[in-house]
Structure formats: structure tokens, C-alpha cells
Length: 167
Image (cartoon, rainbow, N blue to C red; front, side, top):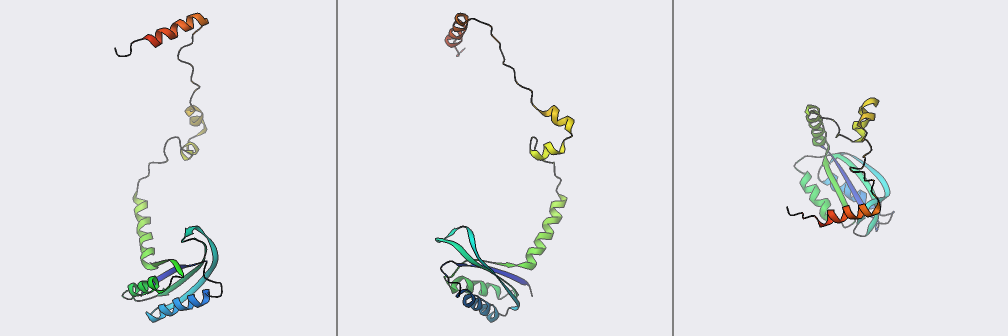
């Protein structure tokens, strides 16, 4: 039978003394659907990354178990509809997850990586010191240096402004 992991989050509106009752209720659901080798870990109350329905904190609970694959959809539906106290949950097949990770490692090993983009900190760190100093841009000099007095400069500006750009 495949192994599953259920992680659920109870809202902050649930009192600390109610958490074991709700947890026992979820475990009973699992047993009713034929779960075996049930292991539960209550991770405690933690701050959420973002608010969920005006809830900033929640009780995290993780349950590992094995169950027949044909019954997992019914169990999922029971968790989804059972209570408003569970504000989020995630049910995964650990066996499928591990297989997918192995396939991903194999596929990633096949990919030919070109290296980091030019100019990124990783690319600079990989270059020898001689190339890094040569890669630094030189200070830009002004394109035209005019040693003109203010009257001549005004005349040049007027010529540039009155020039016809439609040519």
C-alpha cells in the first residue's frame, strides 16, 4: 500500500485544548478508511506566511500513514467537508513524490548547462582575476570637448537647435 502524508492547518480561532480533539477526529477518519501505520506530529502554533481568512496564526499537524489507493479520494473528500476548523490541508503520496524526485534528478543530470549569465556574480566569481580586471568598463570620455568662450558656445547651441531634423 502506498504511503501518504497529510498536513493540515487549524485556524487560530481553535482553542489550544481543542486541537487534540480535532486531531483525534482526523485520525479516526483515517482509521475508518483503512489507514495503517499512522504517525502523527503536532508542530504547534506558528505564524502564517500570509493571512488566510483573517487568520494570522495556525496549528500545524502532520499525519503519515499507509492506505489503499482506492480509498484515498474518499478520505480526501471527508477531510475537505468535515470541519471549518481546518483552513488548509495538503495530502500527498510520498511514494509518487520520491519517484518524481528521482526522475527529476536524472533529467537534470542530462541537461547541458551553459553557465551563469554574463555579468552575474556567479560568472564574475568563476573568471580568473586577470579577466575580471579586463572586463571592467573603462571610464567614458566626453565625445566632444569644446574649448569655447560663452559667446561661441551660445552660437553653436543656436545652430544645433535651428537645424532642420527632417532632412
